[in-house]
Image 1 (spheres, rainbow, N blue to C red):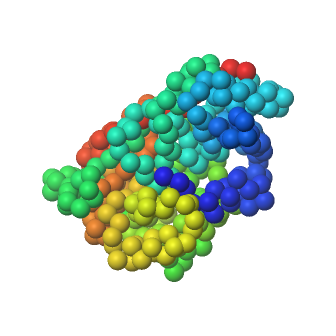
Image 2 (tube, rainbow, N blue to C red):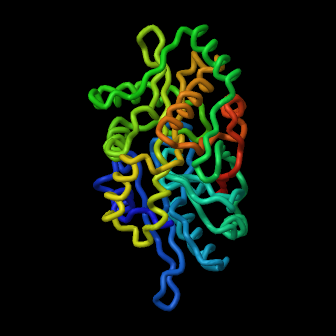
Length: 347
């Protein structure tokens, strides 16, 4: 499913993408007899290295024919570029970081790609592993609901009662995003985001400019009910972000052009014809983790999603060793159905 060319141009642009304020990248094509047969990006992210005190560089935007020689040439180009910048590990795929699309799909090819989730042919794993990479971390995608997105699947009443008890016990309140105060709401997101994810494997803090950039992209298509804030004593301690699965609309757009797809998307949003949702983010500041609040957020999004006729949802990714978040997803009926993998190779 081709992404929108407009979005990819902006993502790759060193002038438009605020990622490049703390990173650099070069792009490579593999050609045979004048025909492009592969592509890859070499990425050096200074903010990642400062955060983790390492010398890891990245590859991303990997696409390749089923040919080991082509893949080897692409990875060697990245290896040389990263080595010249004194990186000692090449990690990926990440386009550009864990805050963007990352990971190689290794399980779950029988289901369609969702919004902002990578998708690739099954043979990519053999190409990457054949080039000397070893698995670094698995990330799991969870789903819940009817595959057609049409059949209603409410949460059990006993579970709703249990989550109400958690809400009362923790003395928290939930509310949707206030679109009339959008700029200030984004400031609250900034305050919570880097606290909520700072201990995640591979986490890279997002700068204010990066969050502003994403917010501007999401603003026209946000459904406020699907962006809940958790408050305690008047302070925001967590939030979630879910979006309608726009791939339902993009699936018919083989050209990757913005129009008329954007108009069709806005019309389907207004008429509630997108029946699938994608939970992109769910985070709570450290001192309030392990208290069931994550399950309360899942419950809110699922219930509000039903209100907007979205009856299938995908949540993730969740790190394979993040037991707390996996348990929270399981409590409200989400089950793992796809696996993504990050790879490392020593330089």
